[in-house]
Amino acid sequence: MDASTPEASIGFVSTYPPTVCGLASYTASLMTAVAGCRRSPFGLGVVALDDAPGGANMPNVAFRHRVGNASSLETAARVLNSYDTVSIQHEFGIFGGTDGDEVLDLVAALTVPTAVTFHTVLSDPSTHQREIIDRLSDHADRIVVMSRTASQRLVLQYGVDPERIDVIPHGADARFAGPSLVTGDRPLALTWGLIGPGKGLESAIEAFSDLADLDPRPRYLIAGATHPHVRETAGESYRESLVSLVRRLGLQDVVEFDDRYLDRPSLARMVRSANLVILPYESAEQVTSGVLVEAIAASKPVLATRFPHAVELLSGGAGLTVPHGNPASLAAALRRLLTDHRMTSRMAMEARRLADGWYWPTIGQRFGTLMSTMALAGSLVGTDTTRETRRAAG
Image: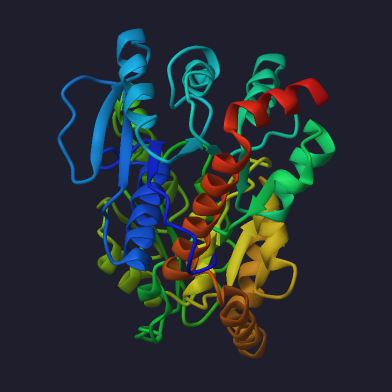
């Protein structure tokens, strides 16, 4: 951004702390990064999405939108239109309505330049999900994704003009890049994040039952609180099923659980203490993974199932990918990572190279520049005119 370009105020739309989820953490980190680049949080605010009344007031929260409430949505749009630009963080289901289609009413009410960040881009959406993505893409002045895979899907499967897409990687906390804190004789493998079905943890646990001959025997730490939505509907039954599996396989001296939701400094220390990271996710759709980015930023070899973001980032040598739901393949790859130290050293070097430019100050600068440039373009052309022209062309 040219020094003469004014810094645009930005209204963010997302889940937000104290809500516990990856999207909330991402948005808080992004806002902090933009504020850091500007040396002030002035002009930055968030419309936080709440699915229950009475959310706590947090710094920078301009309004708490009660999802599914029409009156609240009108207020949210009015608040957002007071900013120079709006940044909508999109995931299916965080807004009200079927597949979160309330977001369409919100964007239709916005009169300022708007960027939509797609955290999920499905390869096989339902008809209704496809309609939501199509209409959001049509209304947005800019579209942001965090991987080339997501960008390619939008272009090839949704027909989005590639000139309107910006690929800005998921940011990483610089504390993850500190020196290794590995200690002890037994190598530590780590999986972290909110716990719930779909994480593939059963496959990872089963994989360790094939490594009983290794000396020293590895440890596997599963760290993270149960996802709030899982806990609301099923309590701790999922975690208890994992503990039962560990006992059934006789892996009590190998698999450990830490059910805390750690702050960023504590999490960074934990990751830096691991020898490697395992991401055994079941989903074949994941085009963005903040955990993957942070693992690479910590220079840790990564073993992941072949979800799209992992294939994209690990293909250059920062880790290994294996088929989904295949404990035997996971075990074989784990054996290589735990015994071939030359290979893991090369992976760590590639990870350091790959993560250059991913840290939050850089990402905050790129995002702030995008929003200010978008605001300037909107003031010169007229946001509503631009959208009408695009709809007519489509």
